[in-house]
Length: 171
Image (cartoon, rainbow, N blue to C red; front, side, top):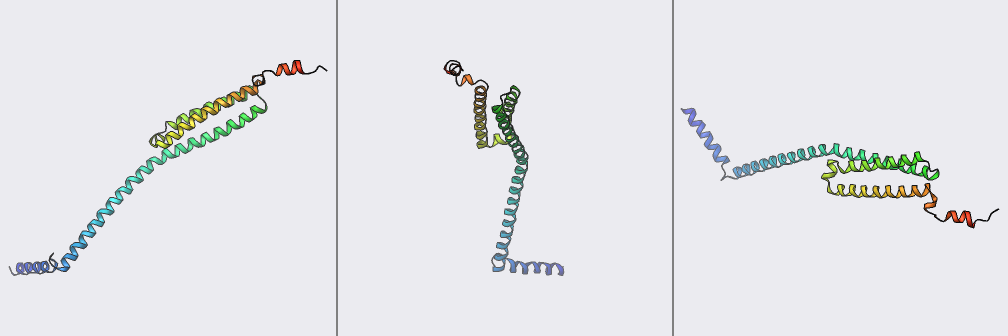
């Protein structure tokens, strides 16, 4: 029994020292609240960082796919430009078919870009890809028109036969 009294007395004396009505007790209570609040804020921040990094990792593969598609489109545009220039120098049917197939390929690539999940989630990128598709369709129409003019100059200058045949003096 004497041990019990000493133990109870020790608890009472500790309670008297650390009780909320003493300065030390209030300080310890405030420090405990601050430590618990700091730990809770740190845990919430870490969970937010984890969530954001997971979203970033999942979106990274989609962004890389879009970047690859855009590089592919850049290469196709360069090919179209090169083939178109060679067609303008010497209008050959094989080069014309190559230009048209490259235009079809870039149109298909633009369609693929519009269907990418990351582009769809980004509203602004979806609008930009739609504008890009319209620009490529306009480019296709204009290239086809210019290639037709180059293949048959009489479409551009319909009176060239009269000028060469009738107005040109006979030598």
